[in-house]
Length: 384
Image (cartoon, rainbow, N blue to C red; front, side, top):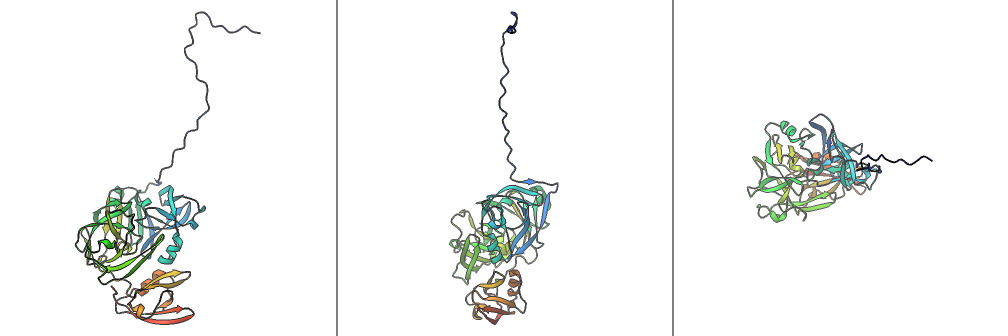
């Protein structure tokens, strides 16, 4: 047995030791960014389809092609559960051109049934706030193009000559601009490409703006994914947005949800916005509006008095406005439209175009009630 190792007498004392080797610690994986711009371009232009005056765009959702409705006032991204691999999913990956949102939180809603029935075209989801809070977005309704910009500088450089700039406020998560009805005090209205009417106003404000249901009005109802809203439709004299003035806009007096912020008086909906080229830049707090000729003129409202929807493969009457030509012709809710002026409408959009003629024009409608076919000739006129 060898002798033990003994340090020499003049060796210095040991003052430190090497720490023992410990178990290696795994480094945390950094969280992915909520959005990323993947390419060198500064703008992404995608075709925009219009159904029921709402904008539809194609995207990649979890790597597959999907169709989304762009509702600029939507606080959450809503996805139909039938568009998901797993109905329990609460996040998706969404990509529009070079713009990618790798882990986008969603809520579930019956988007497909709503879009098919009331807008006449299928959709897998709805997006709004999740897109606008990250990038400036231009919705060119006349040319049917949506453009997503990388930043505010690239958006400003692409602004259309002659566009009108307005200050933008985000109220309760919704982009809003100031507007005045009939010369009254200015109020804040949310920009909502997913809402139907030209203007939606809470009935409690009708008297202060000079509007009321006591004026000539018709019943109004709008269906939504999470419920429907009803009220009355009246016509104002003017809507002023900065230097822009819209003549005789239609105002739906519909009670706004109690959860709506008190600063928000109403909504500018698809019947107004679908006539414009608008650039919403929440990052720069501006809205840019380019108005084509005739966009601010008075607009008729369904001079037949017929509201229609899709049920299965058929186009049917959803409701009839009392006292209108369709009511006088004895059309009723549930009647199936067979033809309009000899043409068989294959889509809801086409059927609405055929019913939206000029005052004085006569429209011949062949419809089916139960198993019997009937014909009605309806003279169109302005019903409000």
